[in-house]
Length: 240
Image (tube, rainbow, N blue to C red; front, side, top):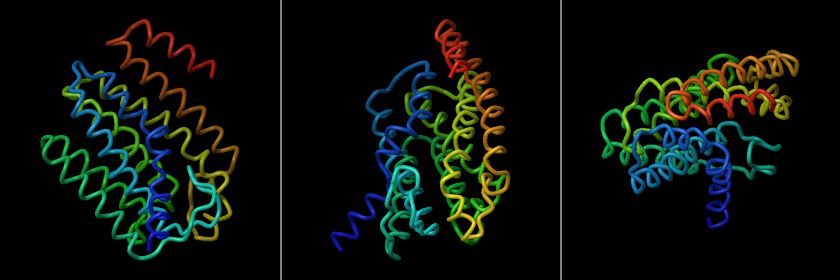
């Protein structure tokens, strides 16, 4: 049992959540007009451990990957209890979010819904090239920025929304790239991911378009609060 618990913790991929997918939430804090430090960092853990970690484990349970996945080179097999444990994690985080206000609670709940639709065999949005993009853009990108801003004590204003849209498009530009080395596994499962549907050339084209417009929206939102950093960020983004 101890070994299985260790496998479950691996499937949370916390290093992936905390050091890669945390950009949106941190951006929300940057865009906030104030900073409630304690609540911000407590909700940072809530979002990236309970919500993102739980959603990642839930998805891994249904994927049953045997080869490398994002943040985990050799994924161990998952057992039935891990599916329920991942759902419990997300709903515990949702209960915690309830004490932080109705808007925060609703946004958190929408993310759970999209994560569930993405993975569950009852909907399996992951197997659709466009619905999968929508699920990731909303749950991991757009909503994480809003949650970060609200956790910091700010309201959701126009600059936050524009920046959130840009951040979600930048994140989305990289999402099909992560599917390229899972092509064979996705084909065996019958998942019509974006990479399966359009191939490597389609992924490259989508990356350029989504990343470019993401930079434009992101820099536009940032420009309203931090003019000079916004210009520098946009120039560096175009170079990269």
